[in-house]
Image 1 (cartoon, helix red, strand yellow):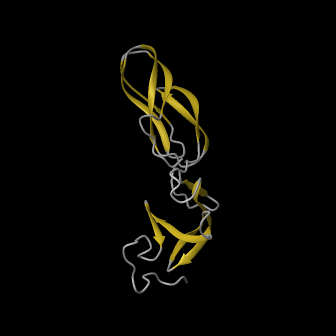
Image 2: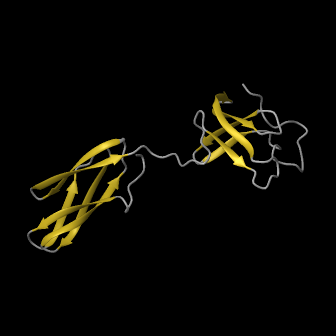
Length: 174
């Protein structure tokens, strides 16, 4: 669901072609997508690949009606929910850990992060992420996503060891 069909999204139907020549085979559109073929075929019975087009807008089993002239048949497609491929999920109770295989910080997992909620800050909604490792107290980070970018609310000099600002460059939470 929600992903445009590509050349790998197709279906094969068996068609009996009476006279060689141009053929158009298509389905109805169901929840934003359909299948079709247009081209020249020889006479006889053969498998024809119908290309998928569009973007499925709903999950579930979808029934398509294939039409070739006055002949019709049906097939179904099960549309699954979109998989979350985001490597930095911001959904409630999502959690992940970073392995410290070189034991730079501690043995085993060096940091576990868990999404614990959201908070409005300066007109934006941030996700609160609880951070825990074996060497420091639990603390909370604040992230939001804008398009494909992740924005962390943090002091400007947080990730630098070379310099620090005399005055913090982060507004207070409100």
